[in-house]
Image (cartoon, rainbow, N blue to C red; front, side):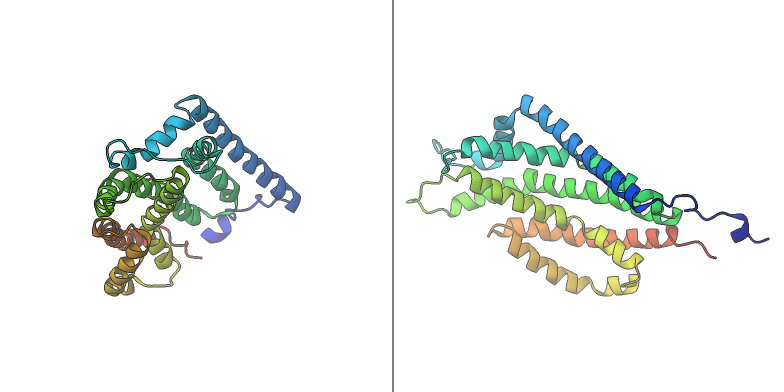
Amino acid sequence: MTDSNNKDDELAGTEQPFVQHLIELRDRLLRSIYGIAAVFAVLVFYPGPSKLYDFLAMPLVKTLPEGSRMIAVGVVSPFLVPIKVSVMAAIALALPWILYQVWAFVAPGLYKHEKRLVLPLVAASTVLFYLGAAFCYFFVFGQAFPAIQKMAPMSVAVSPDIEAYLDFVITMFIAFGVAFEVPIAVVILARLGVVTIAQLKSFRTYFVVGAAAVAGLVTPPDPVSMIALLLPMCLLYEVGILAAQVFIKHTAAPEE
C-alpha cells in the first residue's frame, strides 16, 4: 500500500454546506467589526480624537511659519475630521485581528503546503504595510514638508486645511504601504510560475525605471520624497527575489 493510500486527504471531513459557509462568513465579519469598534471606543477615551489628529498633523505643524496654524474650512470639519482619524486608526490597529478572522475562515479549505505559503505572506504583508506607513510619517514627512514650505512664495500665508491634509496623508500612507508590498508581489508571481527567478533578476533595470515613475507620481514635488520611496522599493525588490527562492523551495506541493 502506497503512502498516498495510507494518508487520508488533508481536507477530508472539512466540507460544509453552503449555508454554513455563509453563517461562518457572517460571524467572522461581525467579529472583525466588533474588534474595530472596541479599538475605536478605546481611542475615543484615550488619547481622544483631537490628540490623534494633533499627532497626525505634527510633521506639518512643526514646519509652519511662526504664528501660523491649520484651518478648518468646513463648518463641521473640526468635529468630523478627528473622528475620521480615530476610525482609520482603529481599523489600522485592528488589522491583525481582521486578518486573523480572514485566515480562520479560509484555512480549513487549504492544504498544508498552501498554509505554509499563505500564512507567512499574510503576516509579512501586514508588517510591511505598517513599515511603509511608519517610514512615510517619521522620515518622508520630516523631509518633504520643510522643502515644500521653503518653496512657498513670501506673499502666500501657509495655513493648510485640516481635511485636505487628512486626504493627503491617507494617500501617502497607502502609496508607501503598497510600495512596501513589493516583496509579496514578487514572491506570489514567482510562486505561481508567472515569472522565473532568472527573469526577475533580468527585470531589475525595468523595475527601477517603473519604480522611479511611480515615485514621481505619488510623492510631493521634491527630490527627497521621490528618492525616499524609490530606494526602499528597489531594495525590497531584491529582498523579494531572495524570499521567492525560499518560498518556492519550502511551499512546493507534495508529490503524488
